[in-house]
Image 1 (cartoon, rainbow, N blue to C red):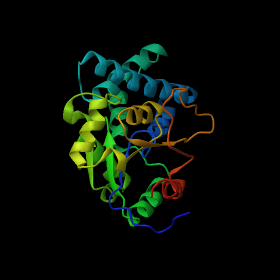
Image 2 (image 1 turned 180 degrees about the vertical axis):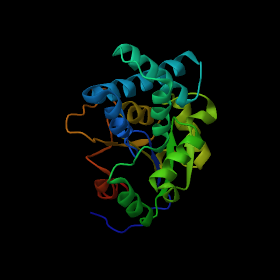
Image 3 (image 1 turned 90 degrees about the horizontal axis):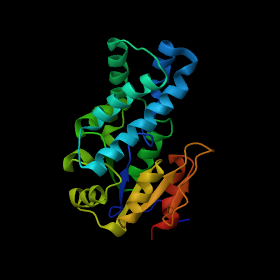
Amino acid sequence: MKENLKRPNITLAFDVYGTLINTHGVLILLETMIGDKAKAFSNRWREKQLEYSFRRGLMKNYVPFSDCTRQALEYTCDYYQISLSAEQKHALMECYKTLPSFEDVKPALITLKAQGYRMFAFSNGTKRAVETLLHAAGIDALFEGVVSADEIKTFKPNPDIYQHFLQATESKESDTWLISSNPFDVIGAIATGLKAAWVKRTEGAVFDPWEMQPNVIVADLHLLDSALNECVE
């Protein structure tokens, strides 16, 4: 294994929601509101949030990612026939602005930064929302910058977004890695010519059986440095 090698020409594009930031961080608040239905509610909310972004992208009918999140919350309330007050919905949306990072994130990012990788946050969220989120998690200073899909008014996995990332960061396809726990994002990056690492955060997670598969699979970000050292020459 090649250790302690500086990688100033390698760019890492970190997905934010679900990769760095735990989107189920609303669970504690949800549990105070709806009890044992909280986990299922949180899962459905996240699924709908992504579905709405996909549909908006295909329709070319862009709204900020926070609007997809809010509309998905409304859907999930209707789906489970749960009546939340306007104040409760507002509290849940505010909670989404300060979700916690996974425990492995900060120490892994510190290690990668020390190796000399160029590191960017790369998200469907607006730049302001992502900056707020990263700051609240205490990891904003570890990134060179934030690249948002909002800048070109569409959503991942539209190939235009990955090309936008390359242009915005002045990176080459061959030297750029997407780091994501979301299979659709990994596939989108690979289809555009980037390399990608899938962060398989749960044992039961399943990657789509497509012809495009991740270059690297890691269980958490602690393992990413070693995995990249094996791949990057």
